[in-house]
Length: 346
Image 1 (cartoon, rainbow, N blue to C red):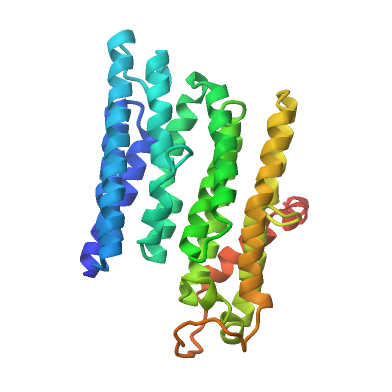
Image 2 (cartoon, rainbow, N blue to C red):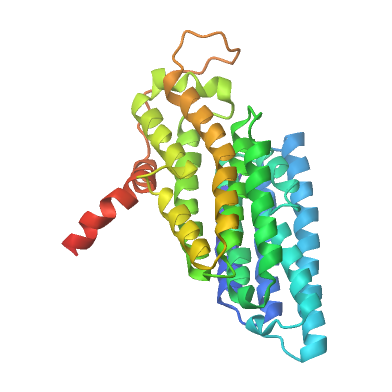
């Protein structure tokens, strides 16, 4: 793709996200979402492969439906209350429609079907944008409207998301699909706590974005898309494979790594809100996700060649790892263990 075109699409993504997260009016928030959708489509379809074109088409159709629902929800609310302010969403029908619209945008169960397919048809760098940057505007809309939304509906969708995200990722061999189901599962944790402590949802999203960026960029460095190819990476880049192992365990939420912090705080907050059954359910269901993270980690580091998997041999190059990958992997694993030391220094 032309570098100038890439720059235009990147700037459009930044502009669309900024417009949505800084707006108070529903029309400007909707316009930002539309700019984002139109900017990411060429990045999904840039390889001109039939699978990429299919992914771009699916993404366009689902996001168009979600944007139409956002507009319909805000217009219904304005019709009944005369308010276009995002925080003044009070009409119950509008709240229900908006919950559906944001769930489609984020890929929450039961509107999750498009996300694994789109991620599988996209390059790893575009997949990273779809999993992190493109989720930020809908999360901010959810944050601003959280007091008006139905907590029972959100907690039900959250439990279903964690369950299906873990269950459907179990038998996958394509790494991008595994990461898509991982994203659905993490969004379930965010939806569970949004009605009780919205700031905790944002903290979870920031740490999830950090860990997901580390995993995507590490996989992009070693050019790996399937588990069978992941098994050969230890011989090529042992240090990066070791860091990938720790980052995956952090993404699974194992203590004392960074990913344990948001899960720990969410369980604590749910228990304080007399939601202990929901906290127990969501914790047990996250064990399903732990299985496929461990499977990825096992393939990346413990399975050593020679082995019998069929894959195309890759040219062995001693290309150095980009500094951003090193910084992100260290942050994604060591942020929580190092925080007491950093707080004592500061």
